[in-house]
Length: 366
Image (cartoon, rainbow, N blue to C red; front, side):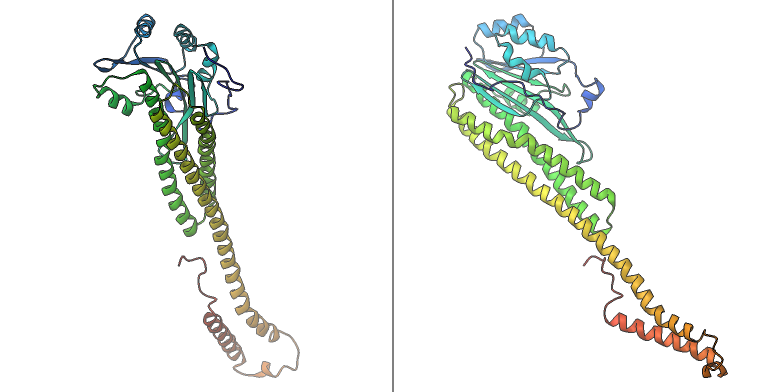
């Protein structure tokens, strides 16, 4: 029997999906077709069965064989609910598993551990974040993984590693697979953060070279994605520590140690997200400083032109007056003398400004 605790294994649906839909969910209108298979841990080693009927699953359960049931796609939710009911799982567990998008959670009872995460990936553009929900439920002798997306195979690396083994799996070894599944989902975040870091470095250089409003918008996109990743990862820190503190008989000592390391991994991911968010802030500040520098350069250029032409305008204004008694008006070469005076004043003032560094481009990178 499951001993319920307040707030445990409850459905906490998010108001909106953390990121964009995967391509296969977009093709199927947000709900992918349902596929299922099972990995049976026999005496000769694990065996993957692509299509297993309900009767054969129940027979394997009666034979007390450890099973890993993998379900991909939630189009046939009623069929999945009936399957879980036939496997003697209480209806309380089905809502968090089949009602995406759920908040990230690691909930535990005495004889059940449920984990709901979002597999985060990026498209060709690192600023395009994609998510699909992955729910995992561990009960004695049975591990169930339900993936919202149906593209590809369920956890191909772990599946290939399991099928290559010839050792006998015990019921308690299913908790190790649960740990590997969560660890695999979290490890996928590091390449995403590395791609974002490389893109942010290039974006910072572009902002310094030629600031453009599109660069600022792109920095805001990265900042929003990092906030999404942090919001999906950070709640797990406390929940994993609570799971370790519970000392459930369903989890072995080795798996408990693995979950403790996973809590440290969550903290590392959170720190990386914070560092990259600070870099996004630095890009915004660099954009503002670069735009201000360019504006200062424009104002400086206008000031130079004004300061050079102001004395010339003064000279032209003086000799443009129409008084009768102006001695210079009677000079035979007065026009050429006035022009020479203007050129001399402009040259001397330009040399003075050049020696003071006014002609230096303040926007150029150093």
